[in-house]
Image (tube, rainbow, N blue to C red):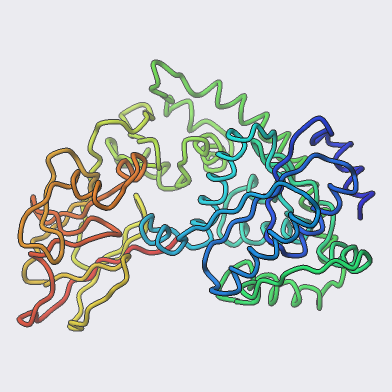
Amino acid sequence: MINIVKKNIVKKNLFSKDHSLLLAISGGADSMGLFFVLKDLGYNIEIAHCNFNLRGKESDKDEVFVKDLAKKYDVKCHVKSFATQKYANRKRISIQMAARELRYNWFDELLVEHRLDFIISAHHRNDNIETFFINLIRGTGINGLCGIQPVNRNIIRPLLEVSRKEIESYLMQKGVEYRNDSSNLDIKYLRNKIRHQLIPLLKEMNPNIENVISDEIFLLNGVNTVFQKKIEAMRAQLIIEDKGIYKMNISQLIECEDLEITLFEILRPFGFFQANQIINSIYSQSGKQFFSETYQLIIDRDQIIISLIKDYQPQIDIPTIETEINIPFKMRFKVTKDTSISNNLNVARFDFDKVSFPLKLRKWKNGDKFRPLGMSNFKKLSDFFIDEKYSILDKKKQWILCSGEDILWVIGNRIDDRYKIDTDTKKVYIAELLQE
């Protein structure tokens, strides 16, 4: 294994012995294997361990294990504890996404603070195969099917050509102990379902499936390199930029071959993935707007206009009482007679008879105020955000659900006390934020 990694580092010019490396280490087999390989090869490393506090005493034992490892081998060790569940609830994202954001934000801080060059991650060939299937299931276009890249910004992954079995064999030969994460067995997570159910099933059909998928990923990377060069040329031809405003001539665009695929790839850097809906609007609905995390797209009469989201107030109308929407995020709206209370921050329950329709979904603005659940007085949203310790980015991303001019729900956080369920409630209106 050590020779494979050494060859990979040199062949792809990933880093040199002049660099200072920050190795992300969990205490599991993958990161432990990479730790000993890098030490044996003579690289200058420091290690960083995240305690996400998701597995009780098991998480704390992982932290102790890593600290003991650092002390034994005289390696500088950075450890940080995170309130991951709380962060995920506040940001309205999955636990996995929350852990990823917390981890890499902290790693970036460590690079600057300690003048380190790269973050080194222990993702290996099996992780790459699992990521391929995750992206295939979710749908990400050809770019997602190219798997995990060995270099992504300041993150380097030197183990991508090594299998999980090879890592465990290497550790056994060296007599190295490592920690097992019990959550890796929980099939409620998509990656684990792929690892423990899908891959074994595919192996029944083709025992060599892991090598086959690895070879396909390699070929797709080559195809994507050629494809993206063509897309970049088309993007340069189709898009005219002027002072941060991007415009595409519709008549020129619709002459493109494979229009949906072409538009998907051209718009992907702006965060738009609904190419089919945009194409339908080109032919039927001038003035239609679409929103990504950072950009708005408007279908004008003869052109598509894309601009950075700044001070304008995008507004989405909720057309019917019971419906689902996909933009700007997935939400479901329905009526029920169940008057029970929910503590799920992604579900808001209102007294149906107090709500006026149609509802409107919009970004918050200065001057907005509401009566947070449990309070008798109004509070400015700006003050509410300070109390809730919102970052500047959190505030920019916050959407609100309105009934007329009243705020019903600061989405993912708090409803307005005036619209809560009480003893007189006969019907309940539910707004639910769906996980992507």
